[in-house]
View (cartoon, rainbow, N blue to C red):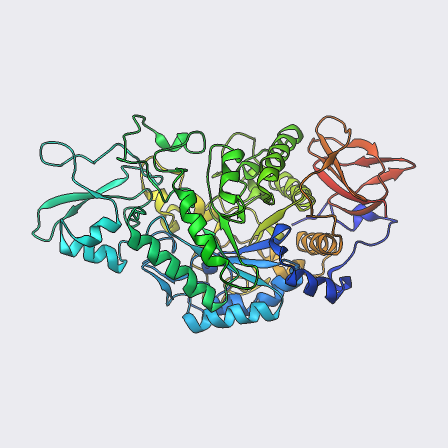
Length: 573
């Protein structure tokens, strides 16, 4: 990988950027103890099966994560968010939970989880775990008993079991479609062998939806929260936080291709008002515990304003900003979503969040290398050099905004999405169903490279569960560690600067500055961020001393030339 736009060359004849090693220890420890640490935290998402494999079985695990925690501390993040590691048949990569109080053997055991949490805390890192309350696995004990006991079982009341329509009940109870494609209902075979009732699953058939109107469901999840809080976790990322409550009567939608409506309309199965009462109850549980613990919502809503409903003072702390993630690399579009986000969060007193990639979307290095308008799941490699250049610039822009930022594992290495995986190795359940999501999530889940050599570039000694590209050696941590201008060193430096400067991440507003078309410029105290989203160099005022840049910035007197697709951090101090 050629690093043409390095932090080092961007600062020729200028003081070197602040390096992680120069950040005083007191800054780190003070940040860790702040009660409002989460308001400007940088949180790193670990996808356990793809981060580090300690036992050579080709699958990442908790012990592997634990051994790599010093890397995350040195990277400069504040917290680690772990995607599910619970006992699961893995029909949807662990988002089908069979036992919420057990670790799946493929990842280790509860002692491994305890050791990971303890080590993270000793390193000054907080730990956030996923919780999946919308649905369980079909191998969950409740659901297995519901099937075995037949119609009338009290356990069936904890899920959405319904008789079918039609003369013989042969049609689904309503017209809802699964997010993964096909009907959102599956008919069961009753204990006597006859076709029987149907159950609701907004995702895969192996993921039956809970009925949150049943008090046992609410009681169970409050207990689950306490179990993991007692283990010492610092918070929860709530999967499908917008989906727990369904409209009374489960009314027909009356529309086909419903997946295309998601994010545009309030659906009878998403973003219903009843979810907020649940989270107010959860908040009372969390507030029983010391240590400033938090909830983070995965809430796909039609507008940022509706997302703000989830982070009112007595509900959750943060919600993912999917509108920002979906925005093209375009100055006008970015400014609009930034303004709308800050305006929506300000009245409820919640911090904005910013995110560019996660385990469900094509990595932004690849998205930004493709033409706009193709969505967030792509199978096109695009222009890799352009994508990396824009991704680096987008990172500095994101880290300069007020609020909390999320980093998905491997983006600090500039990893592209693996768009050419053979069909026979894919495991995304949406890939194998008809008209649901595109099903190309495997490309962002390929295990990350740690070393230049080895059967899986240091991921583990026994290969990797998804094949890694042959050119990932030079993208590895080993190859980029200490290399001037590498993407890894760009992230380390940016995070060190952000931690050392309180004006970065704090507050709830930016002061926009006049800038050429296609350029974003804003001030925050003594700090100025300039992002050129165009394909040509632009001239802007020299706002002081260059702190960091993703391309080579030329300064002549009071004017500076910023290259195409480049972000610059300035300081007057």
